[in-house]
Length: 372
Ligand SMILES: *Cc1c(COP(=O)(O)O)cnc(C)c1O
Image (cartoon, rainbow, N blue to C red; front, side, top):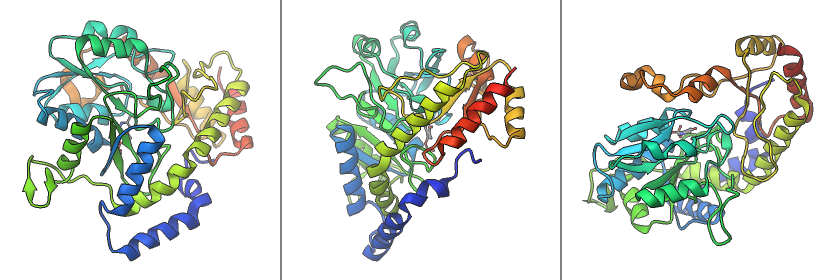
């Protein structure tokens, strides 16, 4: 059994993907042309937002949002950004690369996402933004988060790399409810293993803010809105036509794939019965698109080894909380009890649309008998 086999993920769409790639090759236009525009429009329609800007990858999308806010005078060097301890390091790099100051917050043990109940005490006069990371595909959003942002005039920048297709269940009737259209801006990644994965690198910024979208688009293309007229010192981070073409196809099937992920999560939820295992919350409400299925156990090392002996691969997302990385030495003395505890207990079981029911049942059974 594979944890994830990308060849199998592409297989159902192989012909469509090959035809679309051929069309791009024949067009002679390879970067930010018609396909990129088409995909940006499809993404806006899917999320219910006004603007999408294709970027080279997810890290750049997140970096560019903060760069744009700095160019717009909304933030300045040394301003603080709150983010959860349990996330991929990209979330942190996007802040420090912009010379902003990360304020790492503890997580909620039930969702493994940012603990929104505990962020208000971290806010100072220099706090300018909060990054809810929709980790493992689970929407991190609440009215309380919105209220805090409003009260302290903070931007909410979603890290939506893992949750394309997930919905907030707390939004009112006339509000956006898709992850990626909840906050002031969102960054997403189309890295091949993500729920909406390209066949290479890609990312996007999504927002309803006209000015932000304009500045991000310029910054990502050498700071230029018009050829050879440079308003900002930009970077080169654009979505290429082949990846945009792949994504136009993959987006059509995203909801079907996410539904399959939810079915798998449900099979795990019903069939993992060992009481030593803490399972992730399972509710059929679309709030989670199951990028990962993360259980917790006190005997992780033993369980991993037992599963491996039975040919079942597992992974840990993530073994080290942000503040314990060697790269960020100045944060190593910070103590965030829940994030640190969970980092020693979490284990990701295989979950992807290419898995069969019998694969899933095999994993569930192996977990039941292997955990002591
Ligand atoms: C994948 C990921 C990113 C970065 O995306 P890339 O396309 O790899 O640059 C950022 N944040 C989270 C939570 C991710 O999972």
